[in-house]
Length: 115
Image 1 (cartoon, rainbow, N blue to C red):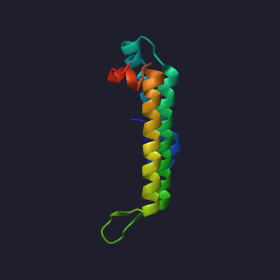
Image 2: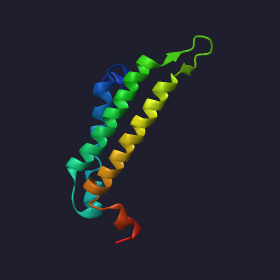
Image 3: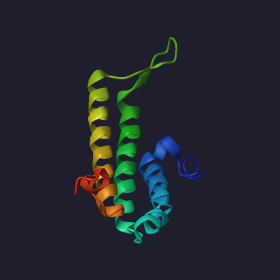
Image 4: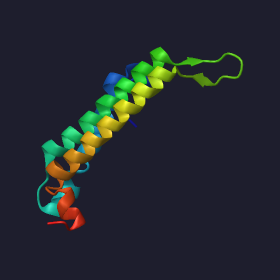
């Protein structure tokens, strides 16, 4: 709905973070229903970080990946695939930590019943 009108892959630094931040605004009610607080800043941090990393990935894919003219498959450099994996893993860990502590006002110990 917003991705292609804003430029899609060609303008990833505008279209992707905006989509993620719009998604964040739809999650305010989730934490309000679960813990009684909208946690707007927490949701904005979670989805903002994920949107930024997704935009970086799309932008860098357009630079570092190439399409094989023979069969049309995408060829990725191994070093870029490793960097992309580390970046995705780090951003998901950051998002999960922020979600748990800032949005849901909880901790892993309380979820597992260790406290």
